Length: 97
Image 1 (cartoon, rainbow, N blue to C red):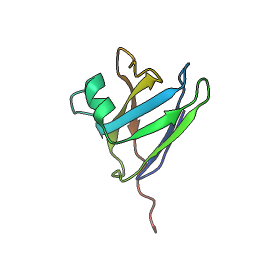
Image 2: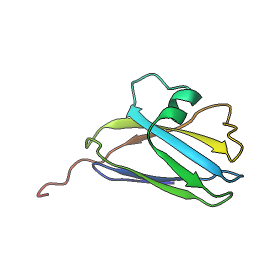
Image 3: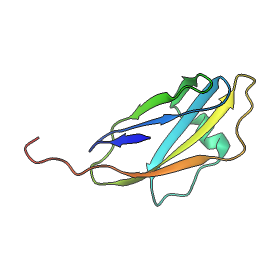
């Protein structure tokens, strides 16, 4: 689930065990990062098992294609094997704003 604005994106992610989520956003045409690179990104958030964690990423450019990359680690520090991703495009800036 996601909500897309002109300079921000809201999305949610769910995992089956308590842990930490990590995300990285980059231009759609850039090479996909590794699990390690996403885990090292500066955007992390606590996650509770089977409860959606809501995340907001701001500071984006309007009318731009991005890809959000996501990795979760459980409370033992075990990371998922592969990076998950979601393609999004920010909305156009509304006139008069």
